[in-house]
Image 1 (cartoon, rainbow, N blue to C red):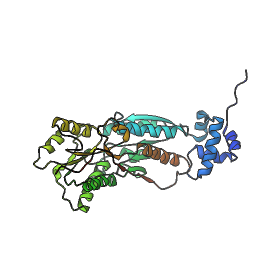
Image 2: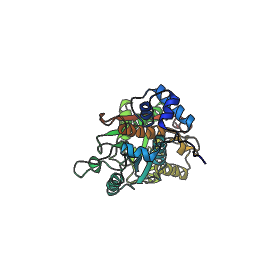
Image 3: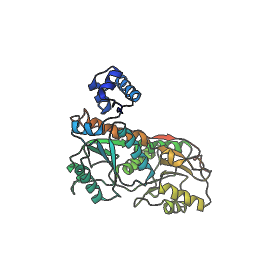
Length: 340
């Protein structure tokens, strides 16, 4: 019985009417590829049901066709969604993703980077739980792999993907101010990491531009990962002048804050307006539908994967790149003018 002939890169090139080199650049994520060429090649590859031969390609390129991905907490739905986007994008280019969870441990982060190198990963997309200062060994600077750092400062001088947290929070403050709110609380993760620092900066800058003073009691930074916002919300409700609006990271902080509101028999938005910092998928069951500052996880994941693929393709000698992902305020039904 004759075997079905395997579709080759040459077959794809002939079907697309381009050179073999052009097909290789498209399939390997090369930088200098026009949209027209990419569309031609991908259409031909899909029509012929082309599948890259991982073993031959690895030998030819001297690569494992495997990429590492390190996150701090895969149980966090935000990180899970990001990983799914990275995996989907690199998988389209013939790469396998190896996922590792650091559990917010410095030692574990260093061990994972060493493991990625030992196992011959071609590169890695990484998120650190810490700011690595100059007073301790930095495993990221010592790592010999191409890395893309996600939403962090200080650990890496290479390629970066960053979310526009500062402008996202400023949008939320301006929107709440336009409804009449002057006492706006912010719940976010602990200090020392770029997302928190940027959110707080956006909060303060927006207040300053609107001529508002910041009541430091309304600014609540979680003391540890996974902390509930219930106690902070109870403390704010006990103030002589409690907040009339809340901007909160859409995790346990937000769920705890909403729990405290229910205990106090307060309603959203009649008694407190709420803006989540989240992705739409995490807010599907919220009642009322929550206004939110949107984490575009798919765009961030695709962007991180694409930066790494470019570095592994034609961009080995290019200077480091930084990709900023915008954050959009999506207005729904959880905000209204304050009482009185």
